[in-house]
Image 1: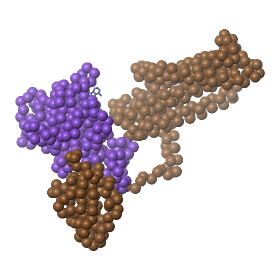
Image 2: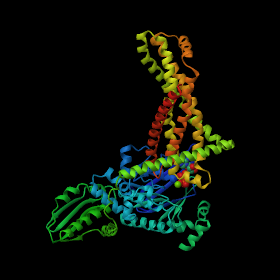
Image 3: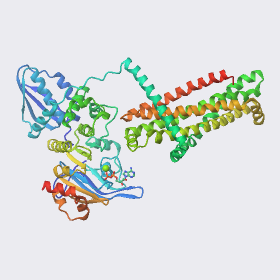
Length: 264
Length: 371
Ligand SMILES: Nc1ncnc2c1ncn2[C@@H]1O[C@H](COP(=O)(O)OP(=O)(O)O)[C@@H](O)[C@H]1O
Ligand SMILES: [Mg+2]
């Protein structure tokens, strides 16, 4: 369980992937992925559609077992981990799924309160108060607390799901395309929220995103997944000047160039 | 928050200082409840919080400190932070800024009143009738243009609902034949009327029980599947997508299922007839010593073509009920996985209910017709 400081930078590595291989039948999705995520940083994972970003994320949160290689969370190896240890780790992670994955039978308030009810001994009144604070933190109006997921808009669903992911105050937050499907204002606010939470709570964030604004504004480092491996990992500024073909391909579109001109 | 800090949060009031220690994080706050309950705040004084002993804090802990301040203020005093880490101070400010935006949870939604529910049943009935109308129109359209039948879907569905149901329908029909013959055998033996076992099994199974048993099995097996399938599509907006593409959902989703059941259920009924006769024959030979040949020749005398047909004509009617109810409930699903479950239950209950009612109506009809 001892976190291992990275030799080079002296920063603590909280997620470490070495030679991760994933196969779906005959198809090779990951072919030796190496990746280190440091405590307190926002790391964005990008790559073309179907390049295996969501799958890699699922492997890091123990929903899918890789076919080879090693994944360590806080220094604990996930391959072959036993259930009690896995559960202890899960309480330290928050996950925002691509579609929100709110439980449709529960209101937003009950959804957000559910992890507290399951994992702490707090009383109901306290759970409801803490849940409403998280709901407000995620930028939802108080009236949303009583709504069912089927009554929420896309942006509200994402926020409610973020509130639920954050309610146990996780150390690492995993986000799968958090701003996809949001209007630019909501997406911008969402980015600000992530930055704020990172600052205040020392959160480590791993996000899969296609949102160029998020990449420039929120991510400390960006990792490009292509051809089953990490093709490059660096700050957005450095990556956008890279000559590596896979990276150029990803950041060469007219939209990417437009954003780059605005940001530089 | 690093994981080595996991001592529970603690709180002591000493003079006019609240000494806080331990980790004020969401997992370690439960122990504070009793301390908070016991805490008596002196009225009208200025208290200070000594946060030097706090090892870790998150927004839950920050919220609790803010609640403490609220309580002090309610008692007419004030509360000041002292020796509080700067980053926690900022966290407090942040939580304070959002806590102002929360409100007490909304009152529970009222369950629908008696009047609303009655109106709901009426609406449901109208919706159901108009769905039947829509289906009949679509069916007529297809009959006029047989080229529009979706053969792939139809054959897939026949395989799924017909062929795959053979084992369970066969087994249960055989057992039903066994049970009926066993019950009858005890009585018939008393009168020495052993051979009439063939009449008993033939009449009760072919006329009444085989069609009913098959229909009820198909309700549970297929009607529920129809509801769940269409309901899930409804949740994922697939039904809306069909509509916007100009493909009537009834054509694509209901007709193949309806046609397939109209074909499959009569076939399954005949199969059930045969299997239950086997069950009866097996029991007759073991319990009453009636050989297979004697049984079959008696059956030929006892059972007329009409008896067989009376059982069989019900099957397409049952098929229509199961398909229409199953699909209708599927389309009524809205929004959530929960709703899929609810409507699947409703679909099975309603179709079994309707099948039995209609079966009773058939009995009345046949007795009026004198067959
Ligand atoms: N459960 C699965 N079974 C088979 N193939 C899958 C499964 N999940 C994902 N894939 C395949 O793995 C590849 C990567 O998927 P994914 O990780 O979802 O990509 P993305 O980078 O767009 O998030 C895709 O080609 C997808 O078809
Ligand atoms: Mg994905």
